[in-house]
Amino acid sequence: MSPRPATGLTRWQRCRRWVLPLVGVAVLGLLLSHIHKIDWAGAWHALHRYSPWLLLAVLGLATASHALYGCFDLIGRRHLRHRLPAWRTWAIAVTSYAFNLNLGSLVGGVGMRARLYARAGLDDATVAQIVGLSLATNWLGYGLLAGGLFAAGVIEPPRQAHIGQGALQALGVAMIMLALGYVVACAVSRKREWVVRGRHIRLPGARIASMQLALSAANWALMGAAMYLLLGQKVPYATTLSVLLAASIVGVLTPIPAGLGVLEAVYLALLSGTVKQGALMGAVLAYRALYYLVPLAGGLALYLLLERWAPVSDGQEGAASALETPVASV
Image (cartoon, rainbow, N blue to C red; front, side):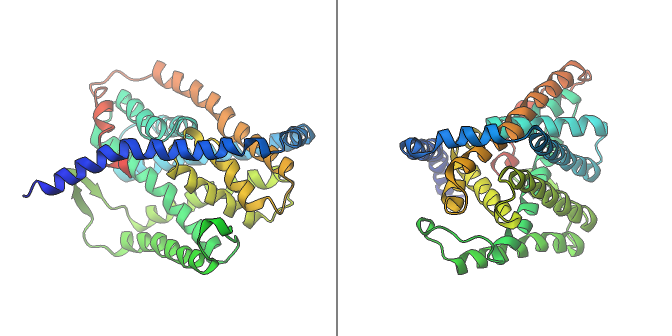
């Protein structure tokens, strides 16, 4: 084999270490340059106007969303048939999700899962498949829901996005086809297992694939409902959800922990003409507090419990190697 592809890959890996942080710094600098234009007084006024019952309802939706995300790893447990108790599998997923939202995917989504599953006795190959299946569940459901909204023309992209309404609708159709194609492949594919970079990947059945789409779509819908309530139901639910989905993908592409500033920037760009800036920023700040920060406290408590009651096993050394599995780059 020619060494050229390996050299090219090495160069890309070296460039990626610098490019992604530079992009993050550029985006953060752009947001900071506009920070003085935000109506912070209006935002604080909007926060003070929220009733405790409304905030409690939003917290309930956030809690339900985090609990539902924990079921993603239960799908992996059913598919891989590992012997870890269901309650511990769910708790690990919920903990990693809370850390993922606030500290980034490598720390929460991958690193935290790898450590806790290894502490529970699972080998690195099984952990890699659990993480990969969870990522697939999250983004396939996202593709189905976002694709439907984009294809329906619910959201109109801003001029500075350099993408027309027709292109966005075509992208939505492609996302729907990809999500549904996954379910079809799981139902009819004769080959059920592949080896990718030395790792065995087994395709789930159609029932599990359908469950992945349903749970993930429901989870994203709960997130949209939380923001819908915080915006005082002044923006149609479909529009609110579309903006949240758009902000989520931008946050993933921007290497800033918790997408700090990204969520605010996308909402300001897409809804500034519909909702007053103060009320809009107040809703986003309340959403961050109730969906990101409060669950992080719960995730920390779960983490301490999982560490305290971790079973004694020989699989605790798998955490480091799990970080180097192919799923970490999905």
